[in-house]
Length: 311
Length: 187
Image (cartoon, rainbow over the protein chains, first blue to last red):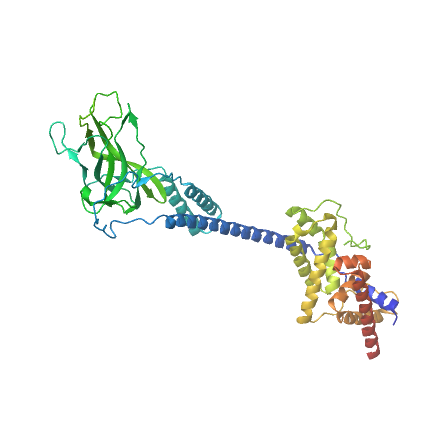
């Protein structure tokens, strides 16, 4: 048997194996497989997208958590009492004064990321429970975002409001909240601050208040903040440290002030001989966001002029 | 396929193949007839050939983004099909199946056959001898003696150097001749 015969028989054998055109069912089968594969890959792509979105949301959540954990440790008045002062402490200008701006950039970015990720999950998730969970997450983020810019979480509920050194009013009534100091001397307001919100917060201090002068005379101002180890006297004042307030929790604060010259009122043209504080500003942190609350006092703190060296 | 055998060639033009699913799907469908015929000749089973073509179509579909030159779509798809057939032949060796007798003899008589019985005997012997070959040897024989592809085109289709193809062809025909001679002697 030579090569030519083998080749001839092989060609005949192979030609006999040729089945002719493909059956019509093959095209249908191939089309179906491609379509199925396309659908399954689309589903897998959707799953991958959902996974990445969930990872993004988790990252944002971790970021928020990290911000919460990384913040300075605050003292909680309910957990342990302040130690009694070893010696009397006088509030110094700058004590408990918050000078830095706390713009919630990271929180805003994290919230936007989490919001976008959860929104995508709500749109593409096929599992109803996942969609409900994502929707709840969006609601929580919206709640947190809504708290940005609000500053009514602290106020004066019940407690004390006093001032030292106290004085008597113009009519001789000593029950009012009057300050009677000569010149730019210190005074201390003791006031109870209450967390009136539903979430814990941290009292961080008071905002910086630069001195202002009117006609060359310095106005009264609040310059420092202290804590109280005992209610409710300036002798129990201690250096301030950030303090956590639970919902409905209260804390007694000592706000140090300087009386200025001659109790110059804000409006110098007014023919009044006294100045007053009707509210105090408190800086607090809640949900990692810093706010400044203006707390209205139940009675105005009135500073009357001494008459010495004042026109 | 792109060989000189006009019956198997399909002209698809020179449009650029993109990853567009509709375009790729249409080009795969246009290859089904020649692919089915080639797979059947290699595998010897129309049913298995259908599976192989479906597998190759799916593999090509998934790998469509790897095709850079649209003009080589037929060669690209042909290589995928040949690989699928090779895998099936190798799997068949691991899981042997009983082959049915060679079909399609009623209407044909190979040139040189003295009579119909001789032709039947010759094809059955060739079929048995063909089954003794390695998968790669069967593939090069089919590409060379059924599609009439040149050695260079086969090398491109299979993805090995032309020298390797020549070597495989030589060994395959030698083994085929030896097997046929042994069968003839035994008869």
